Image 1: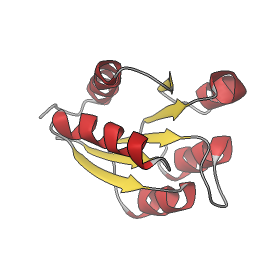
Image 2 (image 1 turned 90 degrees about the vertical axis):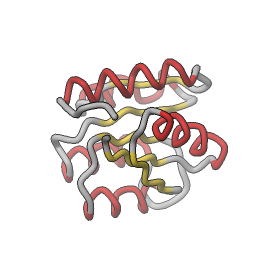
Image 3 (image 1 turned 30 degrees about the vertical axis):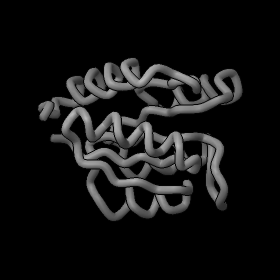
Image 4 (image 1 turned 30 degrees about the horizontal axis):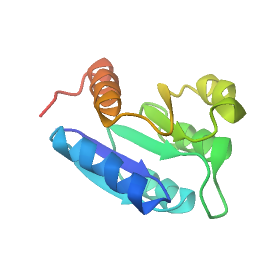
Length: 125
């Protein structure tokens, strides 16, 4: 079982992301803003972070991803966004493992989570 942090301001999308990760047998912690997600990431060890880019709060977007990567450089990050062309290259330059464009199939998300955790060497549930 992996510990996954989901950072997403849309309650519906957050619920889908969390449900998918839990269905795979993982422990999920949720954050509604980039600020909250960053604080959680600083205070806890996660095996994977899944984050939206555009959220309310002082920090969002590529700046959030950069701060997550600097505070937890070994923790893989998957980005989910409705705006693919806006920050794709910047996110990959920061070491993001995957960039999912909303809307996406939950089965695809499951596959990406499993692949990223397998690459990290985290056993599945």
